[in-house]
Length: 102
Image 1 (cartoon, rainbow, N blue to C red):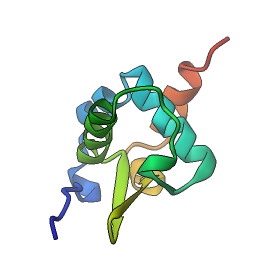
Image 2: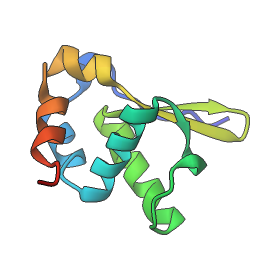
Image 3: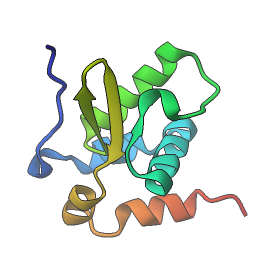
Image 4: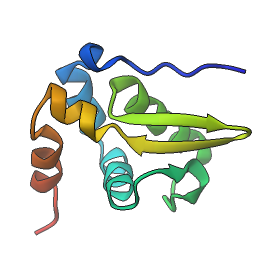
């Protein structure tokens, strides 16, 4: 079985997190996961091609924003909120609040 790369808490880089959160689709994914906690990849209703969605998941995972858990043939994703708040206190909430529609 293939293993997926997840940076350790201390390896999470500020610039990588900001890059991951700079895209509207990725922000939408993060907001959905914060509302619903862990979800299967297929449970998110985002109107983009499967390959595009996979790319966004990879960017979020490799930046340290998201965690992917493999269970059989399914992948479950969640936000690494505790790790992000430990590394960069309040960053996730500030970015999400700043990008809310008025």
